[in-house]
Length: 219
Image (cartoon, rainbow, N blue to C red; front, side):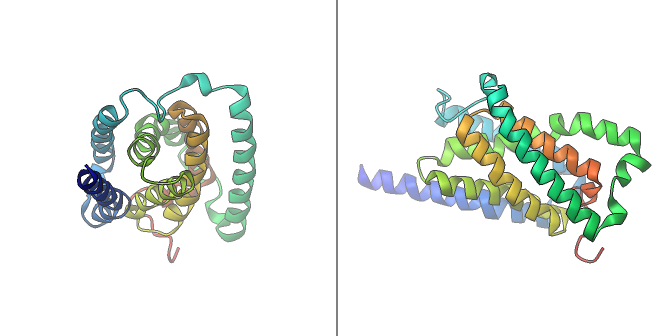
């Protein structure tokens, strides 16, 4: 039995490394831009079946709409206001030419992104980086390490945008989202939080760093 347990633990560690490092690097090297969203949803579907097998009772979370309360939303909005202010100030200082360019130059496309981004991208990302990770690896990692690695995995998944801004912001954001998910076990609440930040990034003018081909290193 001990041998089986050690074997299962080793396989889980290999799966964790593959999830956090190997798969994102392979995506960065080989995934064509037009396949990013389809790949994201296929990965979410695979994670769904894994979660269904290992966490059938929803012990490590789920949609949990009951957690979307004023008490839980209030600190999320205050934290978002602080982070949004810092991002706006940094953009105004370092890249003032980007401020609100998307809203001013492509208002209809901006509106479409505001509406569709949470549905087409956020839900799948949160299922993979929060629901799957907590269901699959909570027995392997401490809460602190799970939150950190959830953030790192989220950031690594953005390497394919070929700049340092997107992965850096996503590591920080991913840890914030993971902490929210750990506290509430609510995929609904953390998706709302993620959507707030994502929509703000596009509104602010930093969306160029979050779609394929954006180069932040020199421009």
